[in-house]
Image (cartoon, rainbow, N blue to C red; front, side):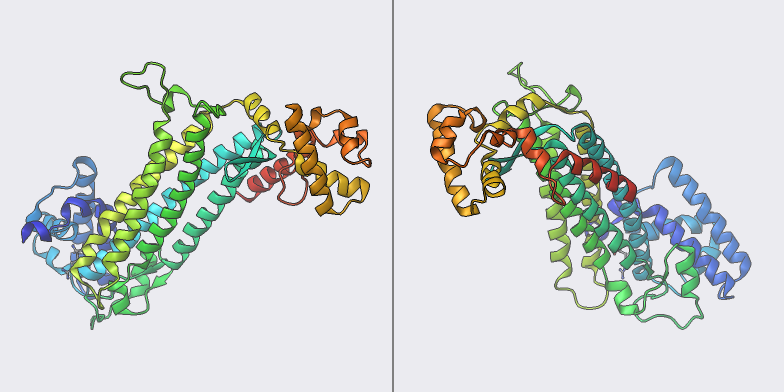
Length: 441
Ligand code: ARG
């Protein structure tokens, strides 16, 4: 029973939040005349001393004390005597743990946001460096049209921007304090819930006592946002793994972010990227674990809810580490822009530009232009060259309306430079998008 009941091995991580909640509660009890001012002062001094002890030496783990709340209260009694027994007036561990956990998740949201901001900065810096660098854009992982590397990196800035928005949204929604809901029904003591909410940095107290002790939406939202952010990191990690592979040869990772093989001395493996990809799977597992824990629980508190902490702690740790590793990789990897440019020019990637030229310059309907372009691609394939290398006479034999002006659009640089529609890949757009993202930060 002792072992299955104990959460102290993992919830000791809540010690700062538990002590902050208790100090706010004791101050409120004193101010409301529910406990004597001298007792409130003794409790506050004792809690401050415990915080200093834990800061210096960690939290002692005694499974007989079950959790961080009992551990702190027991230590308080040892330090200040019977006055410690007054701290638990007008509260329960149910609202206490809900408050501590919310405070912890709120700090985690802020830390994740800082990590996402750092990754965004790294992506913007590399995008600025490569606003003009040409790479192949893919659909179906087939070379489709040339794009700029800056534009490709900015796609991830769009993702991290939405990720930060999700964390900001959930932080606003969770900005309510459950302390004072007591066990489940509220209390008959004249407590001031707005005072404790304000002292702990919340906008207001939660509105329903039953919901206060049984709601874990804030943790589910945190893990949902974390799982999506992790999934974005995983997609970028997958691209790094593919790009670092020899047949692609688009990027090289520095020694700091790659590892060797124990038997193949030539190997440089993208382990950090692979682990970011792997961590994202575990993160989705954390979200699933808590969803399944919560789905069948009747109101209000059930002990199953003690199992909310391990997946949230693990999910946070995984995401924080993945963000740090990804930021390091983005900042330090080397792009082989010559190789990227060469592949961008392969696969007749400017075929759409030829079709668009026929529409624009010769008034050909797009469907017909598409057909003419298909014949030009076949001619280039037969000749074993790119579209831009076909003699004008060959192109004119396919369609007499083609003139020498077409060669202005067949290069990869001309192709990307022409894509100036809002959100398009042109270098000018990339520079404007970077400026806009920096202005919004
Ligand atoms: N250790 C418990 C948890 O983490 C604290 C709340 C205990 N409440 C109770 N009624 N047994 O959820």
